[in-house]
Length: 380
Ligand SMILES: [Zn+2]
Image 1: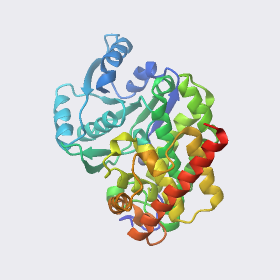
Image 2: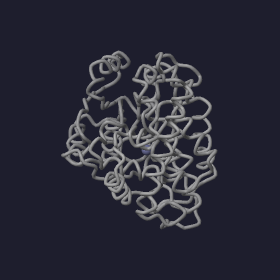
Image 3: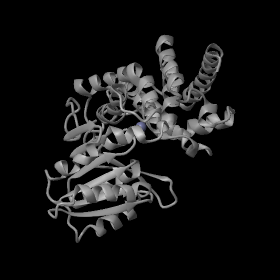
């Protein structure tokens, strides 16, 4: 387990978290905690609009701000190049404004320069903003692994108006990622799997805080998921939407890092090996992974159907056709094999290819039948 002690519990989190409508306009307040030299990585399609906003915010003659467009994969080479670009500016603080890749590059460059980083997510599609890791790719776009850091973001600044204005599919996908938090935390608690706190050094046991957050994450989805989706479709901020933004970004992020992942994310990894993988988002694949994991662990029917009902209510995948995979033994075998390199070994029982194959096949049949019945009842 851990190089520290197999009996030790560990916890990690960003230093501060703020969320609310128009919080973006308060950025200066947060960056001023570190100094007046600011560097901001911004997603390419947001670049001109957000550079303008940033220039207005820091238009006081006291700040030196450098904005940098980010529009590539996060590779080791890119991280090195982008670090070099900041050597003369020497920022006191680095901002990552946008989706997963821009956030990941800001964390990586901040770590290399030993400079605090503030994350400003513009979508709530995954729990990446909270974590102390970056997902690294190769130049050809294939997944190369993760960089794990000793520090989490110093502050997360979440502007709920920006999230409400983004396409609803991002929010729904984030709910799929958050759905796995409790399901996976329960399994890793039973198997006493080390969490991701100081992951490079071996991790730690779950804390009570980590467990409580995983439970809060699941409960919030069940209570507020549908209402939040409707608010987002109408681009307005309601209390339910605020709750789901916090769930997708903060609770889900703290939940996976402090409890570790297992079956649901392994199925996500398996699905990324399929031809149509890019047609679905991370959280959508994870949602189907939740159903597979629940089948694999022989979960109570009541629990399984609560999860299926939630997925149908918000529009998350429940079967293979929903993730653009044809149900053939060959395809299921391919997903199974690709998933075995992931985190199935974090489950509290032995998992082999036959078990995963059977669980995917059963999850697909169960999910498909559930969906047909749902559509028949709703008449849609
Ligand atoms: Zn995830």
